[in-house]
Image 1 (tube, rainbow, N blue to C red):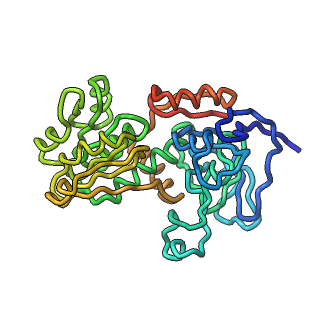
Image 2: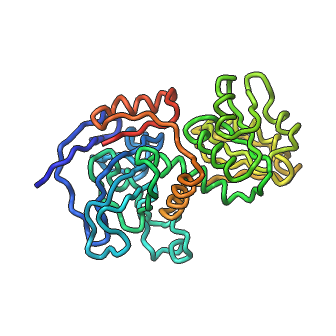
Image 3: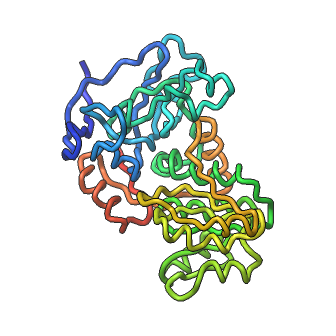
Amino acid sequence: MAKMKAAVILNPGGEFEIQEREIPQSGPDEIRIKVAACGICHGDELVRHGGFPGLSYPRVPGHEVAGVVDEVGSAVTEWKKGDRVGVGWHGGHCFVCDPCRRGDFLKCEKAAITGITRDGGYQEYILARHEAVALIPEGLEYADAGPLMCAGVTTFNSLRHIGAKIGDLVGILGIGGLGHLGIQYAAKAGYRVVAIGRGAENEALAKKLGAFAYINTKTANAAEELKKLGGAKVILGTAPNAKVMTDVIDGLGVDGKLLVVGAPHEPMEVSAIQLLAARRAIQGWPAGTAMDSQDTLEFSRYAGVRPMIEKYPLEKVKEAYERMISGKVEFRVVLTM
């Protein structure tokens, strides 16, 4: 049998181990993808440290997968060998639970999760359920497409469903792996984008990515500055810090929303008065289905949205993972095969 390399976590808290495994055969409802690139996401910590209910080991992490269809299962009709495809966090759905019957596949009660309940993309070949796959358009590099399968779809899909209109003031809180994409999507969508970050060093980049203004929280009160601009319709919270998020709530205008996509570990403390006074709201948003990812990829291609990435070969997965965890990466780490 032909062999492949895979970066495996054997147990919670364990180190990555490069193993040689047999290349798997696709089941009737699956396709096999020859992986070209896989982004490293903070969500992969759930595998590294065992932070997800029911997680079993050994497990190959990775839910920002981009590659080429190498084999198609006997029951699969929509994909063919040679298709350029990606797989994200949502690894498939059951089609029969109540959310699925209502078309809300992302909330499937038995949803598969790439790199969590199924082996992910830190390997040379991956099996994916046919309904979990997105088409990568020509003109989008695999290394760029990988991070868009999680960080990209999370920011793009949340912004397009939040109700902001062209010309509305949208704040992007945090200039990191999610935030640098959020600025681009918001600007390309026609919003008036103000970036909010800690320190002056990100101002030039934020404006280059499409923000018309930058608020440095080291030297200014973000909520007060947003009020001067008329109050934000939406603030996209990408910085995983509860206090930072709650500090900007007063900068929302009437009917404004704090849209949470970065997940802080600590609870958020919010005064009811802050919400009642101007009919403000706080809303969370997960990533998206395969079609949401496909929409993200297509928009990114023609609008010129690209992640800023650092590439590492699979053999240097430990170094690449630690680079991501350090928070010093600008702004996504991608494994290349």
